[in-house]
Amino acid sequence: MTPEMEKTFAAIRDDFGPESIARVEQMLTAGKQERHILQRGARWVMPGLSRKAWHDPREHPDLIPVVNALESHHASIKKELTEAWQAHPDAFSDYEHYLTRQDDWQALHLYRDGGLVGPSAAVAPTAHQVLKDFAVDTEKICPLLECHFSTLLPGAVIEPHCDLWNFSINLHLAVDIPEGCGITVAGETRTWEEGKCLLFDYSFEHEARNAGDRPRTCLLIDLWHPETTLPERKALVALVTEIRRLMSEE
Image (cartoon, rainbow, N blue to C red; front, side):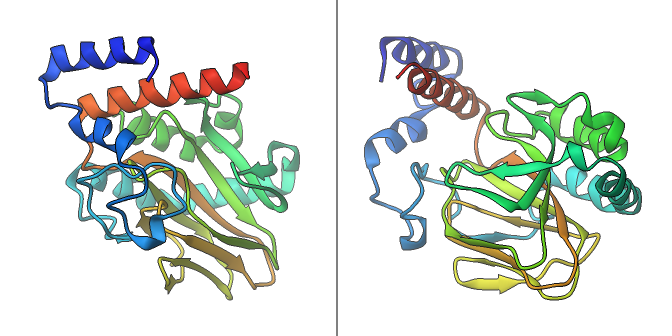
């Protein structure tokens, strides 16, 4: 903990109470204890959050409006995505995961680096507007991460891995799904149902594949885990932002 972070955490405790960010502080000292074996690859696992890999997209009341809006606008989102893939291939780029970069995994970003990606509004206006109205303006999106169309080309495989932490959660809208695609999280394999959402905790080991004959596209949104609190979110944003700043100076 840097002096700057100590000061920030103290201010949050003053505003919200002495125990308001206890779970964040415990996370920083717990190491890899008190976590599921399939979360061992994650950097941080905040205690007290549900220890399950798969979530029902509608089990968390705060997230239901996001899920409903995405699913109800699926037809327009798919139409615009198809047009973008054909007419604006330059809007897509190799997806750069923190562990890897793959040219058979393409991305079109709608939200990145803490804000909406303006040019994407012209390419995918419906998805951009839904994201703004139901995830960004409502502060459901985790500003430390992103939202993008994730396109796996035929034959693409995302190898088993854990993402960095459990205090955000990954929502997928199945936009365009050929036969032969699947995603495995914590050993359980499911398939996407076009027009429907999947929700999972990506601190658990997961992998995906497209064994179909055309690209597979989902719209991915990194949302705050609904069991995190406002003071915890403030502390986590400050913490990760400071860590990234320090790493950029090395």
